[in-house]
Length: 141
Ligand SMILES: Nc1ncnc2c1ncn2[C@@H]1O[C@H](COP(=O)(O)OP(=O)(O)O)[C@@H](O)[C@H]1O
Ligand SMILES: [Mg+2]
Image 1 (cartoon, rainbow, N blue to C red):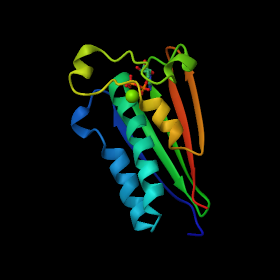
Image 2 (tube, rainbow, N blue to C red):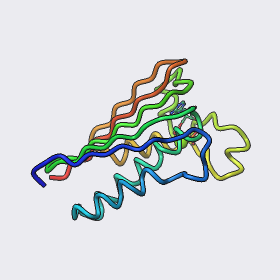
Image 3 (cartoon, rainbow, N blue to C red):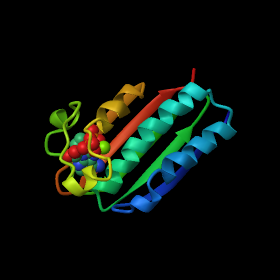
Image 4 (tube, rainbow, N blue to C red):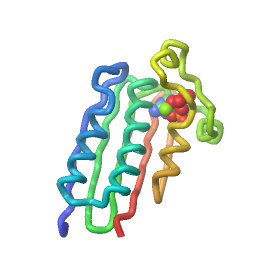
């Protein structure tokens, strides 16, 4: 794995029918590259939560991944409402998900904390009225 493998996926807000598609694609890429299963699991969990947040809260977004010998870097950026108070949003159990989303089984307020927990490096940046950017790094060695 000397070169960087990269790819990107479009994520459409509100498209619950396609939920999990981007994280599934990344998962198969990592499997193809022979990445350790525990690491694949962490990447899949973090990516899935980020993807769900774009589907639930934003109009549209994009997931971009880069894989090299040392690490997996995943960037998710969206065009959405942004997050006013990131510190609050990062707290376990905090959620503004509407009732109809909760009825689908989402909105436990564990997405952002779980992204962080499964990352070696985690960055979140948000501009209210513009969107949110998340960067997740998972070390391979
Ligand atoms: N991409 C995003 N755009 C706008 N708001 C977001 C985004 N991701 C998270 N949030 C805000 O942060 C809160 C916490 O997110 P999360 O931990 O994933 O829990 P949940 O999605 O279950 O509410 C959300 O309820 C929402 O208010
Ligand atoms: Mg979430």
